[in-house]
Length: 352
Ligand code: KG4
Ligand code: ZN
Image (tube, rainbow, N blue to C red; front, side):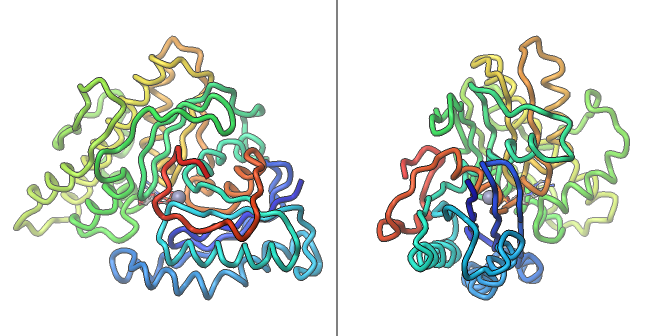
């Protein structure tokens, strides 16, 4: 089954054609990131306008690799992100998908963007570059860490998710972005902090790092919840009135990254101990973070549990439409296009 996926929830406009959930026939992403770097963050109105400009060319390009004529597409269904995200951006993808479903007479499958992020692991397991040859097995524990959300869920099967915990305030990606701004590093903050932190860390061994300037909120609390808003305040206090030199910026970037990564890894490992899943899946833009990937690997390797860790290729961590089409294949519930609408408030366990 060939599915055309469409993603427009934030500042990426993406389309992809995926066969049977894992085979990538095309995967096109246009980003308005450079424009947002100039304003130091996303202005929703600007992002939505950019979506309007990019959506048709991006879909056309994705279809051209599978059919000589995009006007008669060689696909079986259309999948589209309906939420969560920025309403203006979401509307562009949703209304385009509905129009195409109507004129091409194809079924349309609405997709929850947060659940879709998890399918980066199925795509990676089946990609040429992967050393992993099998798909994730259930029950699976998934850590979804993105710009707007931080959620830990237990997946008993496709479509059967139990919410274990999440952030009580800022998301992990948001914490990276806000702290980067305070350090005078460019948007998006996650990659900037990661690069600067890398310069300070060098080849420092994982187990021996002594980066503990900033607090690790809720780390001793027996829930699977996080809180990241205090970190922003702590960084603001640390840099107040200072003109940071390069080396100091790098050291603080490493401190910020370590504070975020430590709590993410600590709670996730506790959840592995408690729920004993067969697979642990990382997902979302923050899962592209090298330190998080390494520390999670290190944490899991020291456990007795027989859990397999899946880490998606970085290009599948950040927003793309391949995960949207993949998710739709495993949750194939088309609904009439008239009943589909964008929902910016969707949560990871919302029924669609
Ligand atoms: O999943 P995503 O692409 O979009 C949302 O659904 O939000 O995640 C974007 C977030 C941003 O906050 C960005 O700073 C963060 O992911 N991010 C990273 C890295 N790459 C992207 N955070 C830390 N390290 C990275 N390498
Ligand atoms: Zn995302």
